[in-house]
Length: 590
Image (cartoon, rainbow, N blue to C red; front, side, top):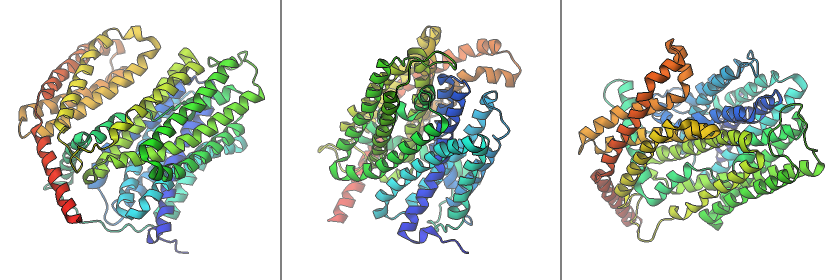
């Protein structure tokens, strides 16, 4: 029997993207729920589980880097996007099956590395699916499709999380690897293979080899992304918002699985809870965007984010009243687990799932609102990548905080930290005085302020690094923060240097020098691994690298301070070009 090409009809297209996004949710649910539950049951601590879950989201934070690769290296015969989806799904299955022979928790480090590779290809698949959606969906389908995609991802997380826990209870946890792999392969065979991707416009290739074309497109990517983020107040606010958690996050990350195990819930109960909350979340996905289109994007999103903190604060109070403060080792004497406590936990998780689902659809629509259509793929993918970075660092700091200050205080910090997101919502609204288009006259000022802020953060690294022992348990959180600062500084120097290279070629060249050095600063947390590769002791490598770790941020700060003094005339020229385009479009619409 010949399988249908789902792209041939409107309903088919919605169904296709639902199932494609489902394959993205399956491995996330498997790792964050099924594997995290298994690890906690085997005595692994919340901090290690938080780091494990956090590392799983890291490739999604950098998926923007895959865009030029997927755009340039594409197969016309398989389909520019379809070919990538086919290849990445097959590699995802292979990496999952390779985990069967690993023993947990003894080989947790290797297990995490393999899953990190797996999720890197899952993130590449996501970029290809989003690009395919932009080129395939009709304008009047995109809103509904967005809700369907998020619902598909939620259902996928339910299959990977709850489905795996149910199955593991009957056939052992090893069987879950085959189950998750089979689910992904089913979508590959029944949906992806029969698809017929429409031919896109002819690509304009750069002169030279495919590699030269790739580098040329990556340079263009950097310039357009830099300009887009600074073009309007809304886009700049979106940049800040994408680096903040969009509401309280703890009841959707490792804290949920840790607490469920400690409250005595078995795998079936946790699976039912995960399944139910995922269904609530999927319903919220479908409702959130629909309501925000009618009630107002910012008003709706602010309400959703505030509501996410309510079940967290209520559950915090209940845990405090029942004496559930610190995580407890297996076999330790525990406070009584009353039916009220279990019911309250269920209610908190389910209501949180609904509110989080509402938030996802509305926040994604807001990022689309502030994105320049001329560079939609570039800018929107970057927002989503940084959005995933917030999930990664939230999971990490919460795991550390749980062990240091306990569940209630961690939930209190999470609830109020999530509300910071609301304070930036008014800045995404276009002012009446703003010129038409997606660039205004303040882009150069924003570039100077961003350069100054990054310079100050790089200089503050020196006293922090010199006194890092004083940070204690908070050191990993500071390390995550500064990894983000160094990566952001590197990207600013690269992209900003390309914008200024005609007027200031010397600054552009120095930006190219210091960008990779700043990226190397991220390796400071992995000196033990590097020492093993180089055949040196960690102490020796630490001694050699310490001057580097002091000098690079200081010298980069000097360069950033110079950039903060520039006029950024190239951005002003872009403002005028965008205003001209907008005026022409307005006259054409009359």
